[in-house]
Amino acid sequence: MALVTGASRGIGLAVADELRAVGAHVVRLARSLSDGARERDTTFRCDVSKPDDVARVIGAILGGVGAPHIVVNNAGSFFIKRITETSPAEFADSLAVNVTGPFLITRALLPALVARGNGHFVTIGSIADHVGYSGNAAYAASKFAMRGFHEVLRAELAGTGVRTTLVSPGPVNTDVWDPIQPDTLPGFTKRRDMMLPEDVAEAVLFAVTRPARADVTEIRIMPGGKQ
Image (cartoon, rainbow, N blue to C red):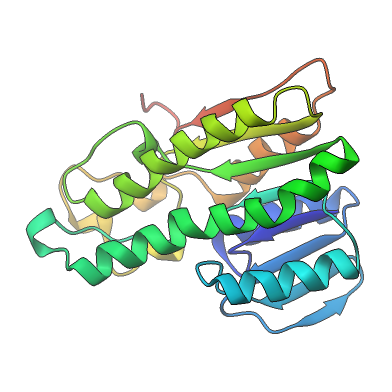
């Protein structure tokens, strides 16, 4: 069973579809979803930045379909503004969704996976978790933070049988770019040249299907021809 956050659209939905296509029962979480179920697909409305939401949903999952074998922390907030144009509320919201959310999900599920002795936490990072771009203060701060969180999680899980992978893609053509219109801006990758959500989903599938002898700790993927 797999749990994917931010799975109503974009990368999260592509990851959920990829895992479901290979036979997994997928639990999808997102603020825009409603609680429901169909064959091998369970959905919960959940704001991962809110402890009460996470506690309710994870409690329902553990008491229902059980502890997932794969946890994909994908839910995220993205915008482009220079530091002086970014309000304190916008900065705090970015950290809440992009950092606090994965922390709450991971913290709630960690004991069950460790007790079972197997499982896989996947963090969807970004090129912005290792490269700083102008206008990316809030997003980069959150993604650099998640790189650190991933490294600590990996250290704390050593020897437990639970694995971790950070997947850091470059530009992916999803609707987060709609308000930004990168095709009109100098220095931005044009949408036709971006990767697709399915490319990230295939990277996740690769990581979680390796045998125990091959621990994929990090995957970086970029549009073709980009460095």
